[in-house]
Length: 274
Image: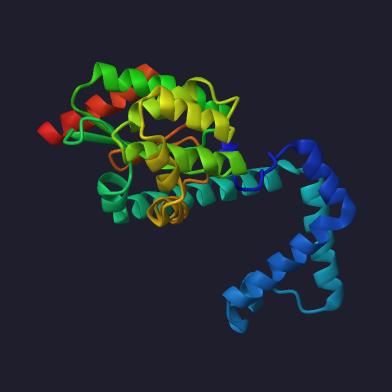
């Protein structure tokens, strides 16, 4: 999956030890003391944390530092828990954003649809023609549509990887205007090594598109607006890379298999029926 976020390095004992030995724990201790001081009033501090002199404060900081140097897993556990809570909050916010934007995700009149436009379950994909993971996912999506006559798939052209991605996205949206989006999209995904204009035009001719109209549509303001709208939508719902999938109102990992997709879809149907 191609990401637009900075990579977050994993926690490990060696890195934590290095950070502590470099003096990072002194700052952590100071912050901890300050936090406690703000969290309690002066009377409570005197009872819970009776450090009356500078010597006592320094002794306490030294004791904390020594303890954490001997037990760095305490820091690891705290940071791991913090990251887990952050991830949970981010997922909750993402879920809320998806629910709030479900109409733009499922029913945008300017986004291409493959499969059944009136399907009872909606799968949304944000993708880029330069993304190799999207090429693999395309085969899964194609099979899902073939196997499930009641599935609606909304395709969100999300060119973020190269200028060629943008040109290809415009070409696919131009093909949609002549009713050939499905064929054009999957032809590009089957062989995305060449996204030159010559190849894009040749593919349009192979599909019996009106080439002059196709070229005009590639430059159309509405086509550009669809791409801009998709970028804004991706940002709102937390689609930070390609491919990004949403089934119903649930974000789905990019490496989801065909059988896993089918299970998720059937689970949504079962909930609707209950």
